[in-house]
Image (cartoon, rainbow, N blue to C red; front, top):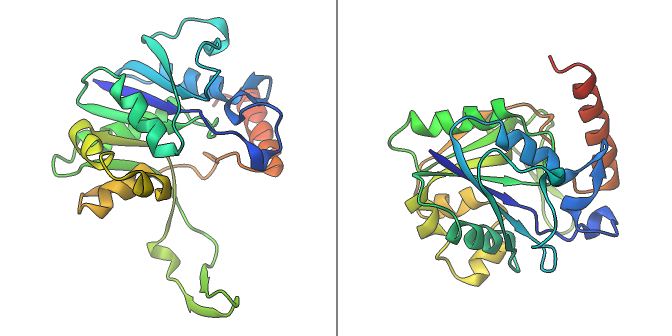
Length: 231
């Protein structure tokens, strides 16, 4: 079975919101509730733990409906990875751990299931991550904004969540120093730094992360379109 950890402790400063990002409404529901709904409907999920901003731990989640798997909340940490560590400490001892950012409300059970299956099918891998192929030309520039390199985009992937881990590998990775945890932009990078095998699972570029007001508008349009035409 798989335990799901939802990271929902972000402040949403770049979004310019008056509430924590996970509680910003998009297409008629709080962003967090879209992710909860998708994870509740994902096969093999046995338990859900959500890391929320301090002071929001007692808040109602799941739009007032009890999720199908047992669900609990914990206070988030000072960094994203610290929030993951706290949620993992509260989670049952399932062999696989799915980590998802509430800021990606376009998650589907199909995406989550594909990432879980990819890790189960590769016994040598420690993690599997959702990602979309990069379609833009990517250049690397120095501080003076002078291009020094054009990267080969066929090798590049835009990383998303969910990311699924073997529990022991994630626990070891989260034993890093607070400085390492604060610098990590995703949990898979902590596995990579320790030489772990991480699989890329191709997924839809529509699984966007909401960071700016423009992202929020796009997410709303995509969610409303999906609700009108679930197929």
